[in-house]
Image (cartoon, rainbow, N blue to C red; front, side, top):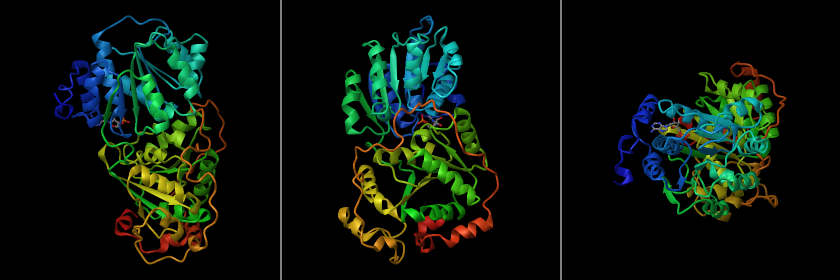
Length: 472
Ligand code: AMP
C-alpha cells in the first residue's frame, strides 16, 4: 500500500499495546512523516527522515522501534540497551525518553535517559539491569561507557535525532567514537529538519541502502508560521523588542539570542523594562532550565530568552511568537528556531530584527527557505539591491533612517555559511552556575514602558502592514 493511503495507526501495522498508547496520547491519525517512515522502519530498513520539527517525527521512529522490540523479545542484559537514541541536548533527550515511556507503557518497555549536568549515579543505576531503549547525549554517554557503567556494543538500532547537529563539528568526535562501538549490522535511523551538504556525506556513510523520506522539501520553513523582518540598527534593537512585547498580541514568546551572555543581558534588560522574562541556555543548571520551562508552559508565561542550543527540544504547543533578536550565522538554525512556533498544525509568527551587519545572513536564510521574508519597514537600499531586484512590502512610506547612511564595510564573517555560531560546541555541557535572578511575575510597568517608548526606534511608529497590525 502506498504510504499516503495509510490513514490510521492500524493501517501502519502497529499492534494493540501501541494502538492503546497512541489513543491515550490523543493521536487520531498518523502525521505524514509517520505514515511514510513507520512501514520502512518496521521492515528493518535504514532511513533518513527529513521532517521539520513539530511534525511528529519522534513517534515516527519510536512507534515502529517498539513494535520491532515486541516482535523479537529478548532478555535484558546488565548495562546494555537494544536501542540507542542520541540527541544533542538534555531537553530533547528528556522529551524523547518521555515519548518512549508514553508509547511503550502497555508494551512493558524499559527506557532510560542519560545526559550531562546532573549526577550520574541515578543514570548508572537505571542501566544496571539493562534497558530496551537508552536515550542519551553523547558526552555523558561516553563518560559512562568509559567507566563501564554502560555498554552499547549490542545495540540493534541507532537513532540520531537532530542529525544535522549530531554530525557537525560540535559532536563529530564523540559520534565517531560511539558509532565505532556499535555493531555493523544495526539498523540506523537519522532524523533532521535540515541536512546541510557538509554533513550529508557523513550521514550517508553511517547508513546502509537508506530510504529517504521527506514530508516537505528540505529546509522550507514551517508553512503555518508567518514570517516578518524589521530592519533596525543594532543599538535600537532592545527598544524595538520592548515595544513589540508591550504592544500585546504575543501571548507566549521565545526570543532568540545568539550567545549565552547576550541572552543573560537581554533577560536583565527585559526585567528592567518591567517585562517578566526567563532565560534558558547552556550555562544554566538542569534545575534552572526546568524551572524556566515550567514557567514558560504556565498560563501566564514569561518571555523566554533562549540560545539555540537550549531551545532544541522545547516542545510547547502554543508558542505564539518566535523573535529572532539576532539572526543566526547558519541559515538552517533559523528554520529550527521558527519551528518552535506553529507546532502541531497551529499558526505562529516569527519576527526577526535585522541590523545592517546581519543583512547577508537574512539573504542566506531567504535563499534556504526559498522565499522572501515579509518586511515591516524599508530595508537599507544598498544592501537589498545586491541580491534582490523586487521591492519589498514596506507597508508605508520610506523611513529616514540611519540605515540610509552610507553603508559601512561589512565584517568578514558575514555571509559565511561555514561560520559556527558563538558558543557552539559540545552541547551536552555539564557546566553549572548561573547569575540570573528569579523573575518577578509583575506585568509591564507603565513608567518603564514609557521610558522605553521614548527611545523606541522609528520602525514601530510607522504604518504597519495589515497582517502585522492584527498581530499587535
Ligand atoms: P515531534 O515532531 O516529535 O516533536 O512532535 C511534535 C508534537 O506532535 C508532539 O507534541 C507530539 O505529541 C505530537 N504528535 C505526534 N504525533 C502526533 C499525531 N499522530 N497526532 C497528533 N499529534 C501528534
